Image (cartoon, rainbow, N blue to C red):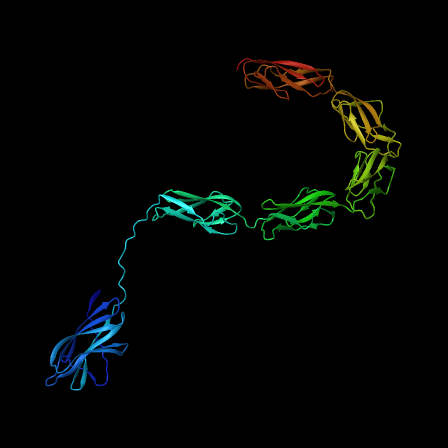
Length: 558
């Protein structure tokens, strides 16, 4: 198969060779050039020339020459003989495809060679471009199945699953899904990653919702058949000496994480690296478990070589102490090599307390047991009897019998302990605080007429002394009257000030004023009456000792 291309080129390249001249235009002239290409073996150039001799001379030969990078690589002779004027076409064959040549005509006349101006021409060559093809649309599958390299994939190995479409030319994007990602996962490219032993179903779904699946059984080639421990049976360990355990899988090619557990963390704990730490005496079972529940156990018996067999105190029996004399107890463990924390306790903190360091502080008379206890419950006890050498045998007051106390005066009482060397705080108490109160320092304050017993009590042994106080009011009136005001008839909005007169003269009392009808006429605490509306009201005044007087207020118009 051949194709032809016409190329018209205008160039002015001049090559000079010995004995070669450019002829006058009338001697040899380029007419044109065309390039033909053969896609299999060669490229051909057709070159047309017009020659015309000078007068009296004939051409001896003529033809074409072609050059590559300035070097002549070929020539074609058209004719040898005498010619005076002619037009010729030369065919240049077997040229390199895709290569640019300089081609020119030549003619020999009278022993001299003449060249034409020449052309450059690029051969085409090469294979023809492929004919465009159209891709038919993909056919949707009517069915899909899934193929797996094996029905029993191994943990630690990845597998690529393949969807198979019906009909065979069908294709579709696939969505992959695992029924149990804890057993095996599958990514968007269909690569299966087994995780642990178990059954799993892998489903492929096409874009048009056709589904196919394959059921696989994941196998763990590294699962252990058993677990062994570096120590077996029952191991006795001291309470201050941790024990390091190691676990080995069976067979030795097995792979698995190990979980450690203690049956009694109050006796001994175990870390996830197998380090057993004793806590207190007793027995605990330590278990190492593989991921497939294979396990091994051993027992740890914790003993305390330092536990005391007993506790002693620096004081024994019953100790009698004065109430103001704390003392210190010390405890010793038996044997002397024993180690233990100790705790102190008093059986009666109201009598005596004991500090964490063994200092006993008396509180009040009585008996208390002080006990020291080791961590294994070994203990020692002493009895402490607290006595108060300063407790009073009695108490006296600076006033006795019945004391008459005017309403506007106070009474200061003082208590003395018996014997004089006694010590005790005193508590004061009134039998009737509505008549008279007493302060913590013994000051009695009257409240109203009446009788009250004031008692002084020793705080440490409840010794008492009392005195009666009779409160009298020397200023109380025997009678009261309301002084007649300028008027008792008021218009609404008017006011009048009332005042009271006591009998006998010189008496006094707090007064209480009251209106029988405040809506008509009201009265304030000073005795000022204010009229409000039409009507009448009785105004009453009362003393503290219940003496009263009344007056009528009239409001005839509102």
